[in-house]
Image 1 (cartoon, rainbow, N blue to C red):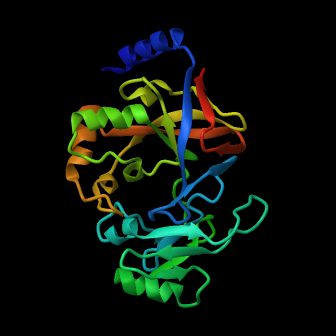
Image 2 (cartoon, rainbow, N blue to C red):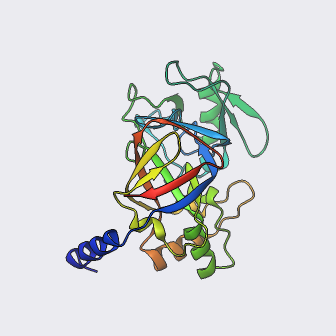
Length: 260
């Protein structure tokens, strides 16, 4: 579809738009970039996104850049998980994090041996640092919030029923139960508001997926056909990004209205 026809289609869809009512049925925060995160009962949204999301990052000590588990050589990161060891607040420094490893054992970010032990596990020199721009360019500045709907996950499951389209593969902050809505509905939401009782987001763009979605993590097996299904049936898109237009908290079970 060319740009003109797409714009015309978007305009027609917007004229016929009626508010859609969804429910927040799962919430995640990722304390360390590229690691598995925390499933929570509520999330606080500041002006730049979920408070504490990707608060830490693992730095390649040679290149001086943050590493990503979608890149060659960093596969183990997506099998590690992280959680904060204290309350995360906008008016206080981030608390330490604890990293747990699939083979067992944990590591705290405030342990003096942390960098050495992480480097040994990865086989290359790394540092665990705050992702605040003081050491390297911060990652994830593109997306204050990543969300996905049950409609999209159900559609992909219909296309490839053997696959496990668990939202954990796609690493959203927010999973929205969209009821009887069908298809890749987020892609009609550009510029629209996600209005919760205590905060508001505005949808900015689609989320282009990468090889991270096929990696084994937790109880999910490696499955390259997951990304094949997304690529071949929806131009590698799954879910969407949103900016924060009203700061506040969202709780599990909160209603979220999709409106103009």
